[in-house]
Figure 1 (cartoon, helix red, strand yellow):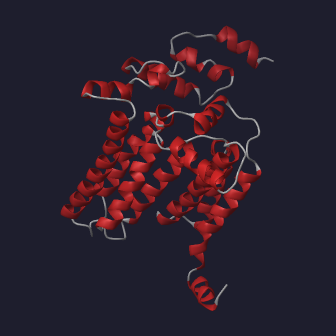
Figure 2 (cartoon, rainbow, N blue to C red; figure 1 turned 90 degrees about the vertical axis):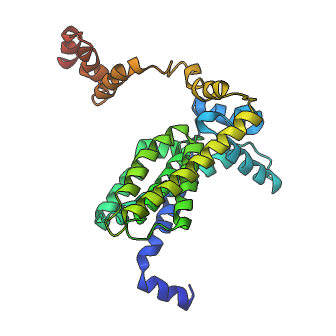
Length: 303
């Protein structure tokens, strides 16, 4: 480390903490890469290696497979002769580690005690969901890391003026999060709320202007991407066919079924019952349906 670097580190050693967290989390995830892939990971690998344009550019997670294909091709350019598994897993592990590091920065940004921030970051990084999705081949962690980065930039607008450059960066990250996983469109609401309710030092006109710049550019990026892919790859030629293309894909997946507002209540019931997953929520799922099944619960409890 040079004398200049030593002086910078002495003045602000905390600036290196996110990078250390990134490296540590990445090494842990790389050391524990999954050796038994689930069906989703196997399918992702098949598409990354041999998928057509329509398979690569699925509307629900449009960007992950092309990114993984490009990363795999880069490895091949430098002489790699193996399958896409290792490059794809390393790519996902890096984004998983990035999400951990960004979470630390977010917690510090909102004023959390650093010891508490450390414990929360460790809890997230070592949680089963984060570890599982960071060591397999899935689009979740690239989407999560992009969304977290967008939230971090939004939080920093509380103490840094919302300049066009910062808003453009926030728009790019928001669009990336949505392109990695279509469900991330829901982060638009909390991000909008965060901009509209910036500290009073930022005038109302500045907040509105920031919202228009960020929202307009994000909309243009996402809509432009989907229009290009829809028309050039899928042959979409009308608004009705565009709507069909964007909304029918989840319905083809039997595990999710048809999108229907009548499923809101059953979904809520399942979510509540999932809090106590043992014995089907200790019978809670059936109880909420109006079916008291004590005859099934009592024998389990009495064992």
